Image (cartoon, rainbow, N blue to C red):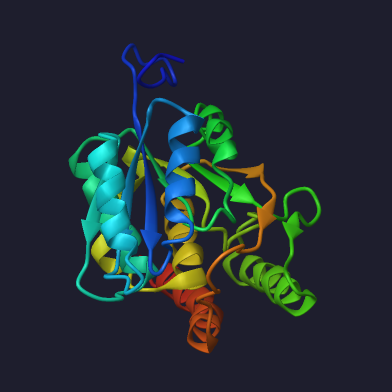
Length: 251
């Protein structure tokens, strides 16, 4: 470890990472998430992507960025969806040559304390996935019906795609920049859980090394979940779409 980054895989320079945090109505969470992320490692910058939150999240994000040069903010005109937010963040990171690019939720369900574990795992993997189901079930405060939905959805996705990843719907992950540079991001159009499954599948089919590390997922403490029936239906369909595209050689 260095003061401003890391040396990974024989590199002779310090490397830096960008944590992408999409927000919509997260004014109660964002300041604490930013503080904990900055504390996790000095080599990490943050990109907050706010979809014109009516609760003032974007304004607070600008204030945090004014106070801390490691924090950056991208404002979008309206709620455009999680998938497009991450795509915008990936393009931002690649254009600025960040070495490691992270996905992380804004509500502390993804604990920033795990970020150093992702960095360490990235020494031997191209995509590191924070898994709720690697060592049993590590989910706190979810109602049983939602836990069963998530757990069974992952079994379903593994069966259809043929992947061995235990948590295909995880939204807490770390990419090496080379992985994102290899993907045609314009071809990714799914949202929510489906977005996570799709990007895992595309990376896997490219032949990159995927590795899971265990995390404990804690349900939202502020605000409300943004999952709806559209998200669930899309996640059911996306595994078949990906398999068919792969068979047709059109990934």
